[in-house]
Picture 1 (cartoon, one colour):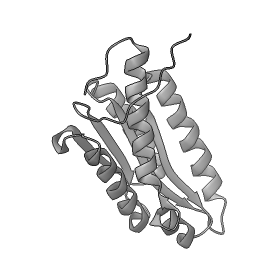
Picture 2 (picture 1 turned 90 degrees about the vertical axis):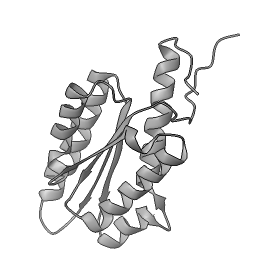
Picture 3 (picture 1 turned 45 degrees about the vertical axis):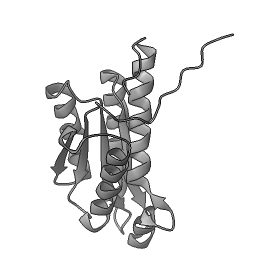
Picture 4 (picture 1 turned 120 degrees about the vertical axis):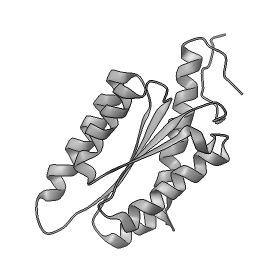
Length: 162
């Protein structure tokens, strides 16, 4: 029988960062509240959370890279933002590069980088995904980071800290 490795949802003893974009803060504040609530409810201590606020979504990868480089004590990073499609091509110039850069940072650092950057057509859609009918994508991104951090510890052969 083979081992089945899965990550748990206990955040006790873990340290995380939330990196958020100030642009579209009406939406992003709700995502941050959801992510923070998820981590705290799963045992992460308030003093083990760091929040970093970037000016916009385009700056999220560089802030995330800085935390990955300078804060090796972090078990993972939840990245939150909101890019709303408008009447210009700006959306395409921001959304895809940010997603690709964050994925590359996770691969290179071998630390979970949760993608909670909403890409929507309208403000209404964004608000729905930030705590209304479609749940809170900040909460979901935080839970994915927490579970992945625990899974990586299992992969390394260390027992889960409880």
